[in-house]
Image (tube, rainbow, N blue to C red):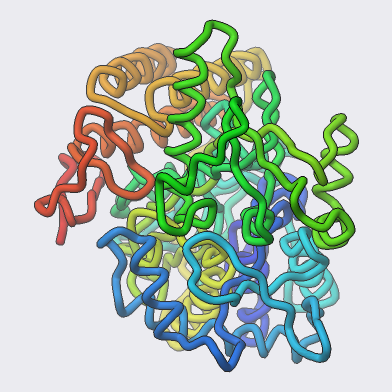
Length: 525
């Protein structure tokens, strides 16, 4: 048993920053599934969107965010993001974080959906790595913070309607351990790694969604999965992200005939919002495959018209990775979309608190109302800072008290079921990619749901609800069912959700999907 003032689950920017803030108010435990660097933040090539230029304004940033969100953003949440984001950036700089500078000013990049250059980077195309390493150093030298690596959250501990802590699987001792605290913040990231083709690390399988759903939290807008338009194509589905900033620097998208196709799709061409670019690429790939049996499963990202020295200096790590794989980034590289970001998540208020008192969420796991139906590029890291800060400040000002009255379940591990869990993951990935990918329809979603239900029924039939690998497999089926169920219910196309049988937006469905355990899905204004 462990006792702390604050529990932080997750080691992306949201979790690390929340831990850094919470250490001012008490003892903090940071719990992470594998290594502290295994997070979406660490692999993020893009930057942080925040207004720092005199020619930009929070209002411009707000407008861009709301346009990208396709009618489902919460304007108040967006207002908080665009106004508080710059302050959080200034604080990071004051603590020693170094961002890229030009002539004494922050170097600002342009990405899809932004009307102004406002994306701040660190180390060019390794912003996530730089800021994660900075925050890791900050917590490792902090005597009020204890880091628990190789610890996976199994369930939320509750006393009535109040969160008392977390039940955690220790992957080193192979035992379940109870962590208690006055306040708990979940920053466990997204769920895009349940798709077979993804930009995410293997850890991003939606554990936070599954445990929050089990505890009774409302889960919102799970149908909206953002597919990153440009990941380096490989036949084995091993995706490598090609930052949106590459298109921001002027790269073109070309089909197999060498034609630039985005100019016919959207006024912003290659810099249109991600959902539009991803669907356009998917459409071009389908045309190529329909025209001939051996048609390419990718399109080309062309940089041959750009200054090669600028390309190499601006994107040194992407350039190196492409070279390792036999591609010359200064010419052209093959790209295709991949599951990238979970737009929906665990519903919370403007301070990150969920339906359960004392339980907060932030980062990609949280549904704050900022992203709407489609995330604006580089808003995610800004959201981590702004709402991680707000969650900690709210928790510190609450009257929550530690409570050890909860008696947790006793879990065990049966190693003979490890391979079964791996097979479930592979099957779920194939089902989600095939039936719940970029383009969906009722027939495919129904088949996908039937297959997931069959897998889940087989797992449940074993009667081993308190076995570690069984629990892990059920996490996967829970999250995939939430996504497919919401996608079936939303009979329209909007943002990160495209139905070929309902290709237009419906004014009647300018609402949020809401799912809770033992209740039917409903739509909320």
